[in-house]
Each structure stands twice: as structure tokens, then as C-alpha cells.
Length: 100
Image (cartoon, rainbow, N blue to C red; front, side, top):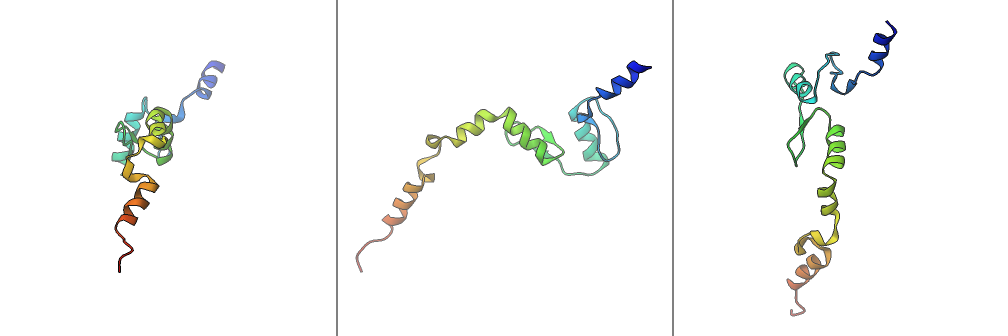
């Protein structure tokens, strides 16, 4: 009897519906349930198209699973030249002249 009570302590609540307390074996089944039963909008990872119920879960997933992509985006040299500030200033200045 003690063993059964302890097993509940180790139950993974990640795949439990917080609206109706339904329990699922995997994340995908939970997402399908929430979409159909509760008509909730599902957020999608832009990199791998995995679906999430909460935006905070999608953000956590992106930070952990796609950190290599995010780190590349933050590198100074990875942006096209036209997005760099000095290039934009120079292009803007070239449209004006001192002639009146």
C-alpha cells in the first residue's frame, strides 16, 4: 500500500490537463485533447513545428532545443549588411545632398 502512495508522488504532471484533470501518456495526446475538448489556441514552434498549449512552454522549448539557432541570430556578423545601423545611416544620407 505504501508503494502505491509513493508512486503517485512520482507521477509526471507534465501531460495532465489543468482544465479537466485528464491524464495523458505523452505531450502530443495532451495537445490534441486541449485543441478539441477545450477549443484552446495552440502555439507552434517556428523552427520545428512542435505544438504547445502555453507560450511559456514554447519559449522554454526554443531556448533549450534551438539554442544554436538563437545564438547564430545574436552574432553580429550573421545579419545582412542592410540591417546594420551604420549601413542604414549611410544609405539614408546618400539620398540627401548639399545642393539647393
